[in-house]
Image 1 (cartoon, helix red, strand yellow):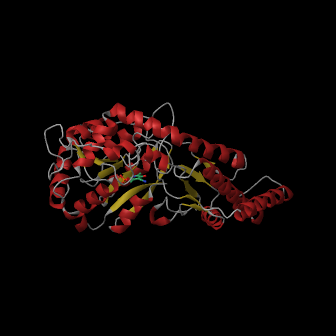
Image 2: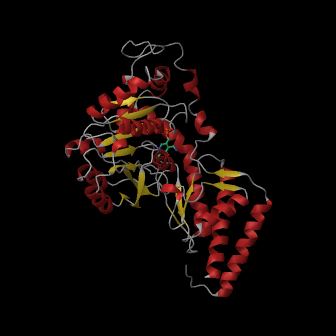
Length: 423
Ligand code: PMP
């Protein structure tokens, strides 16, 4: 870390940061910026969901949704989300309440029952590794840790993972069986994959014949601007490139309707869908079709999803604006930080000088502003540069959020100027 500031100027800035930090600590705040949870007002937007299906229990095909069966989920709901998730309805499965659960199950099933195209169970592989674009989503990394899957970090660019690195690694190493991708409004950087990135992922040659892209499109409909980002259709591109079974697409309504009480989706090639259905048929006699019908009646169609997401945006956009405004006013031009300006999703990534993230998070915590642990954005919780902090602005109210981000910026200045003065 270097600076062009004179020692006196630096001492003055540090003094101001110390005063701001002391003032923050004196307020004994209890603010939480840790997880990307919808705020209560966002959940209220789906209030009507709770009184549905309102005495109607029949799906479009005549199925009584109160009864067992229908493992693939209601067709009318799959038709709505086919467009949102870019998967033909026939190749889409509407399942339980959590897409993370589906990702978990896909890993377990791949380990214990042979995925289409594989020569053996993944659990019998000598080596089992996944590429992890960083910064990434900590729960993907926890799944890998849980199942002993080695994680290989790959740097992110502003167009998705660095494809030169990805192509080289997957071409030479048959132990690499998959890659985690959050292709739209990524967690935590907010970036979206370019068409070129999607095309390269679809056509790249992999040493593993059973390589899978875990395409976690959790923020497919979660725009924050007037210009929704569109990403290329990975599933179609894979089929066209002769790698039809490569993509596992995931999504859910967790951040559309009710987090924890929504509907999750899995989309893939016909062979993969049959594979998952066959495995699921051992695990369940069918999903919660009452909740699925409730979602059909509430959302109606893809336009209904878009209209609903506009109402979500009206609540979320001001929060993201507060974050940008305060980061700019407090840290702009200091050389102490850079940050992402997401066009959708739930997160902002803040980059602080190397070796400072853990300390910033610790100081913020001591002063009452709880942040996601530094390192959580990297495999094994280890950010080698100790520089990345994830900001999740959705849950707190506007006034609280303002206090929290102001507090965070005071901590960045405090830790940053302390380091500079010591250098
Ligand atoms: N994937 C990503 C990228 C997420 O950010 C989240 C929620 N934080 C999830 C999956 C969890 O989704 P679900 O509620 O459908 O399990």
